[in-house]
Image 1 (cartoon, rainbow, N blue to C red):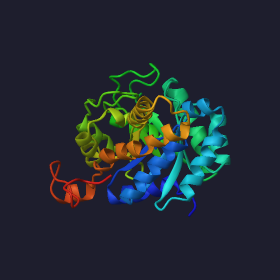
Image 2 (image 1 turned 90 degrees about the vertical axis):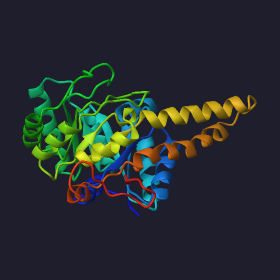
Image 3 (image 1 turned 30 degrees about the vertical axis):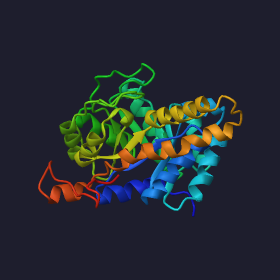
Length: 302
């Protein structure tokens, strides 16, 4: 099947009131493991390629074309997304090779410049059928640029979406990028207030989800989040698995044998996030914040 379109995956999740896992990859092993986890769960997924990943590989095309090939061969809908792109040229390259969505990050700019740059990129992308995510209220911990205590004000979120025309909005609600511990404190009330103000067709995006406890991910989806971004947690388990394999056999010289050991741990690392999958419609119908629809094993599903 062709690679899925991010906007269509998000629209379906919005209609169903559920969350979608968006997992960052660095190499092919990451992508294979992420898709294997999605297939095992029978759920759609988004493969994300960050600008930092592009810098690591030296160019977007090699890793993006590999990710698109993996997406096309998957048994579930898999989309490929360019994440945290600060370069307009990189956005253009992504659109040209068939990536269906981008996260354009102008959050380091002054507000007016952020608006202008994001609106211009969104207009260009929309002419080419590319779905656009942007960021308001800097998410903590990104290369020291963002303030860890930043919070998005609902009225600012609404104004930003209207001024830029973006398709999805990443908001600051207590998470932080690159967290190695899972103890972020999320402001669920703020998520609900932002969700109530921002147009319903515009998904809210939770960055820095590696640092959020499993139960809090589910509550965040019930409160109004749709796209759940995870990167650091996968990198942690990938590295740990390779380190363990090499330590077990000091004579091991074939990188295929050490790196393949990371696939199952990375797939397994997705499971807590998938187990957080909420269903806002059922939550509302059942009568409020404490209600949720559970799967057969007693967990909600991402």
